[in-house]
Length: 285
Image (cartoon, rainbow, N blue to C red; front, side):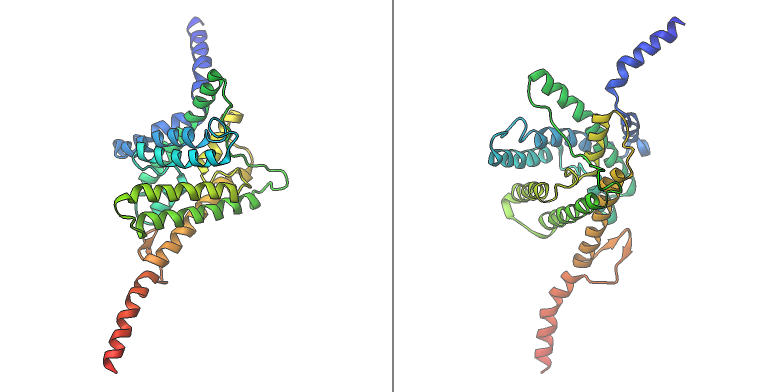
């Protein structure tokens, strides 16, 4: 009886430190005997940094100046990526990388688990920090089911924002070369676009990231979302946007989508071959 009481007291003391889903996410780090443990670590650390450095502008930094908040947000995007080693910090981005063959399904899963774990830890951690410092608490993206119970309008917003974000990611990472300062320029462009999307697609928070929408909900409400619209908005619509953006990139640059060839394009190769064909036709004449 005493032992049971001790276990109960220990559980009550420790359970608030482990949000719903955290244990599962942590266990996922060792899938395939820890083959993707470094990816999990990058995502976990990157998400912690991303939330701390990009959610604080407007709350802790630049509360009275949108220009300063924008600048701090951009700096936070670049810094979190650089320090953490270039993680996805976004399950929808991981889905896109899997669709394009840039990573395996298992790696995408482990990266998603790492990002989720980072989000589940980050929100209570930074709330405790804000409370102890007397600063404004950080907020998070929220789905409002009133008038949009199925999440159609909010989902469309997340879908469109994800497509734009990924097209920019493809362009600055794989298609453009900024020379000596390539990393700093491409990350700054990405940061500016993210901030622009936040202002342009506010319907669902916005999150433009399934992990942010769900981990914030779990932190705020103490349990998993119960609204179907939440999952449609943040997961179905975002991941659908990621797959659609991946399809567009394959049509443009070639490659495969989920290992399959697309019977359209690649536009990029056709554009390169057009001048050659024109020269050959002129020679024949």
